[in-house]
Length: 590
Image 1 (cartoon, helix red, strand yellow):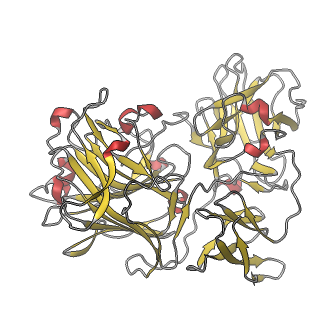
Image 2 (cartoon, rainbow, N blue to C red; image 1 turned 45 degrees about the vertical axis):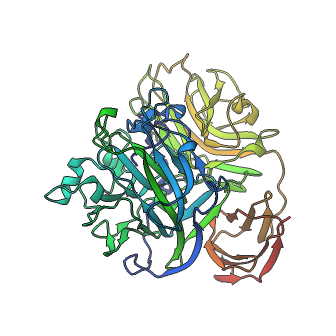
Image 3 (cartoon, rainbow, N blue to C red; image 1 turned 90 degrees about the vertical axis):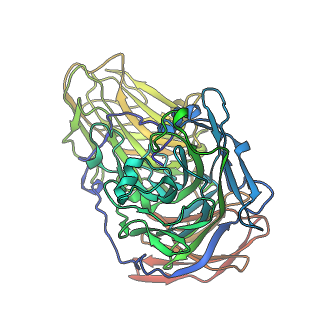
C-alpha cells in the first residue's frame, strides 16, 4: 500500500560492502515447481470471519491516523482516522447467509481527519510463509477517494521497504494509472491491481530516498473486468514460493493473471514470513483525492472479506500462530566467525552492516582479528562525524542478558579518538556508553593493536531500551562533543552478547516448551535439517529449519495445554556424508 510506519533511522545510511568476502552473498536460485501450473495441497489455515466479533487472538484493529507512530497519513497523505468501532463481523446484505469481516468508512471527523474507517493486521499473531493465499473480498463503490486493500508486510523490523511489501489487491488508483490499461480509461470500479515492493539500490534516486522498488512500475499489473468489482465477492489469489510469485483474480469469467508472467523472488525479504492487513483507506497519494472535497465515493461504504485461506503450494507453505520470537540464550554472535556461540547473525543474510555517513567514512584496509570478515573503515574527513551499526533483519529478544550479560567486542582504533558504543530497539529507543580519548574504558587498552572491551548490558540498556525487542545489537559512532581532528582507520570484529549464564551441553536433537503456547525444535548440526510434526494427529507438516552456524531451529505456536505433538527430524550429517532420519517422538504440552 505504499505505506510504512518508521522513517529511516539515518537517511544517508548505506550498506557496508567492503567488510570481507563472506559478506557479499549472492542469491542462488534453485529448482521449484512453477506457480503457473501449481499443485494446490491441503488447507493450512483459514479465517472464515463467522464469529460474533473480530477474533483478537488473530487480529489487531488499528486506532489512529499514523501520527501516533510518527507517520501522519501513513506516509500517503491519507485522510481517514482508523478506529476499532469501524470494524465488525456482519451479515452481508447482498449474499444471504454469508457473514464476513466488515470494514466501514464514514464521513465522520476525529480531530483534523474528516473521515473514519477501519484496518486490521495479524502482526505477531498469524504469519504466512509461502503457499497459496486466497481471499474472497468485496469492495464498495470506489468512485474517487476510496482505497480498499488486502496486503502483507514482512516481519523484519527494518525500515520499509527493506522488510518487503506484498499487495495482493488494491483498488482506487489514480485515473492516470488506470489510463495505462487502454482507452477508454477503465473506471475505478473496474480496475484492480497487485504490487510487490522491496529495497533496491538502483531505485535510490532523487524523489525516492527510501529506495523502494515497485514491480508495478511501468509494468502491467492489473485486471479490468467487464462487470464492476463492487458489491460482489471476487477471489484474489497469491501463489508464492521461494522463487516466484503470481497474482490472480477469479470471478464469473474465470481466473485472470494480474501480471503477464510470474514475478521472480530474488530478495531475502520476500523469502521471510509475512503478516496480513486489510483496510479501507480514504484519500491519499494513491488516489485522486488529496482533500476531503475531492472524495466523491458514496459514504458510508463497506468493504467485506468473506474469508482468507492459506493452502500448501507445490509442497511449500507454513502458517505460524502467535508470537514467534523466542528469547536468545547463552552467547549470541552479532559479528563473529570462529568464536563458539549458541546462535548468531550472519551479515548479508540475517543482518546488515550500515555506514551512516559516507561523506566522512569509506572502506578500510585493516585485516580481521579472527576469521575472514571484519568491519574495517577509513575516516577521511576531520571535523565530521562517523557511525556504523549492525542492523538485524529480525527482532531479537535479549531479555535473558539483562541481569548478568555483557557485550564483548574487539576493536582497533587510535587512542586519541573518542567514540560511543550503543544499541537500538524497535521502538527507536537508543542508548550508548562513552569511550573517551586517551583513556582505558571497559578494559579496552588502546596501544595500536586489537583490544577487547567488555560492556555490561545494563549500561547499554539504560532506562529506556527494550531488551525484549532489539533492532541494532551493536553501534559505534563519534562522540558529538569531540569530533576527530585528523584522519584514521579503525576496525571492529568478534562482537558477542554473553548472558553470563552457562548453557548446558547440547544433544543432537532437542524439543523445548518455551511458554504455554510455543514449542521449539532444535537440531545441533552444521548442515541443513527438516522437522516433521503433527498436532493432535492432524496433517503432517514438513519444514526446513532455520540454520544459524552449527544449529538449526524452528518454533511453532498457537498450542494449548494437552496438545500432543509427534515429531521427527531429517538432518545432514557431515561425518557420515549423508542424511539421517530420526525416530518419531511425542511431546505433550504442559
